[in-house]
Structures are given as C-alpha cells and as structure tokens.
Amino acid sequence: MVSCTQEDDPNPVAQKTVLVYLAADNNLASFALQDLEEMKEGMKSVNPDDLHLLVYIDTGTSPRLVELKRQNDGTVTENIIREYDDERNSVGLQETIEVFQTAFTARYQAESYGLIYWSHADGWLPYPTSASTRWVGQDTGNGDHRMNISEFVTVLENAAPHLDFILFDACFMSSMEVAYEIRKHTRYIIACPTQNPGPGAPYELIVPLMTKSDAPASIMQTYYNDYAEIYDENRTVTNENWTGGVALTLTETAQVEQLAKVTQELLSTHTAEDYPTNLYRQVYNYDKRYGAYGYYDMAEAMQAILTEEEYATWKAAFDSTFTYLTTPKTYSNGNPNGLYSMEGTCGVTHYLPDTDYSTLQSSYQELMWYTDMNWANLGW
Image (cartoon, rainbow, N blue to C red; front, side):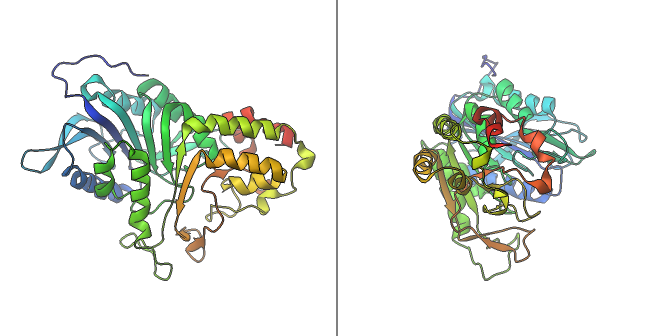
C-alpha cells in the first residue's frame, strides 16, 4: 500500500480522489476519447476542491496521466501530470503500478478513493484458455498483452489505498471469483455480469456523483437508468444508439466473507455424488459469444447443488452481498438475435466444470475461491 508523504505545494485534501484508468490501446480507442470528453463535461458541475479526478489514457499515441480541473471560467482542462512513450504496455504490471503510485500520492490526498478500470476484460478467464492467467485489460500496441487478475491484485496491494469503490467499465467482471480475489481492497465493486454497453458508462452523469456519501450505489443506479430509459428490444442496437440495455451488479465486499463462510459450510456436507451431471448444460449462461464457457448464474447453480433448506440459508447471505439491476434483455454481439433474456438471473457469474473447455480447470484451481471453498470435494 502506498504511504502518503507530504510533497511540495500539495493540492488541498479533497473529499474524493478517483483514478480512471483507460487501457484503450486496442479497438476501443475511439470510445475512450469520447468518454474523456464526457468526464470533462461532468467536471463542469463539480467543485474542484471536492474531487481530484485523475485520468490515465492510452489510445496508442501520447499515453498520459492528467488531472481534469475546472477553471474559474467554467471550462475544464487537462493538467498533465506525466507523459509516457507511445510504445508503453498499459496493462504491464510495473507500468500499472507506476501510474497508481503517481495518482495515489499525498499530492492528491483525499478522505476516500475510487478507481474506474476501463478496457476489454474477461473476468477470471485465462488468456489464452490454456494459460494459467485471468485477464483484465488489453494492450495491442506492440503485440497482444493482457493483465491477469493476480497481477491486478498485486497492483492494489502495492500501489493503492483501500478504495471506496472500483467500477469495472469492462465486460464480465461481476463474477464471484473476481469479487473474492479483490474483496480486501475495496468497499464496493460495480460491474457487469455480461458484455457491457459499447459506449460504456455515462461519465457526464456519474462524475458529479463521485463525491456523494452513497457514490457507489448512485453511480450504479445512474449508469443503469441512462440505458434503461432508452431500452427498446424492437430496435437495432448500435453504439450511437445503444437501446440494448445493461446489467449491473453492486458488490458489498464486507459481506463477501460472510457469504464465503456460509458457502463453505454448506458445501462441506456435499460430495461429488451430489453434484448434478453436466450441470453447466442446465444453468443460465451469461456468455453468448462461445456457447458454454465460464459465466454461469451462481444462484441457479447453488440451488441445484444444495438442498432446499440449505439454499434458503445461502440465498439470504447472497442477497446481503449483491444488489442487481438489469433491463429485461441485454445485448451480445455473439448472440444470433443480438438481445437475450435476463429473466431469473442473479447478476453474479460462477464457473462450472465444462467438458467442452476442460483446459479451464487447471486455471480455476489456482483461484482463492476454488481453494477456500474446497470445490475439490465436489469433484472439481
């Protein structure tokens, strides 16, 4: 964890310091530039003494860390903190740590801190599927680089204060496995269990919410409302007119430990004989790109494994941990019909052993969630 030390001419202590990390040296670069403009619009209504809004952006050229600052005339400027080489790998471990250490210093000291991590992502899943990594963030400027979840945890451990929230503006990050890996580093997680909308969060609306006492819940609600208001399952979804809805989950990490305890205790009474054959073929699958894969509905899976009484106990712990909002359908570019129903879903994904993708199993066994829950007892 970074210790705060006084620097020359520090900025005033703000209510909140938020780092937005735009790892966009990939095919999302144009969206990152649009979102940066939205953030500037949002800062126009924020007291500059209340929020240090730091943005790292790499779209393939001129990677830089800036502070967005509202001026006396109402305009918002990019005050450059540091500039980087065009060949920078923005998902490299040391490169990411360097940016976080610069952002979360005494110069930008605050009462609380937030992080928005913006890029491509694939939850806990390995890249490629035979590798023992889970990835978040992609940089294709000089090869194809991904950050795995264990490295992301290392960044949080070594270069960030305890965070009020992490918003993953990236796909498939509302998974039990991800929440458990990062639970000790943030109070709340806001993430999509599905592919998130192409245009991402409405930053012109959520930036002014960052200093609110209920910022995580307000950000999630506003993100959802913005897409729910224009949701229309009868229209063609485009990035310019995203009518395909959104699914968002807010995780309260203080409750994750209790959910883990309940889950472990209940699973300890079960063996491989109790595990339904080919359960992955029966449970709702959030990932419409590849068919069966790694993102199954956690509540539905647990209901199939546990007894009715056990499931009621487990579901109470689950409901104390997660808040879920979804439009009736959401969009996937891998689904033949585009939109698909979210009816009955819980908003949190979970891996299930899958004979079609058996190479995932060894990677899954490296996760803390696998070890701590002792899934091996069920034949995993």
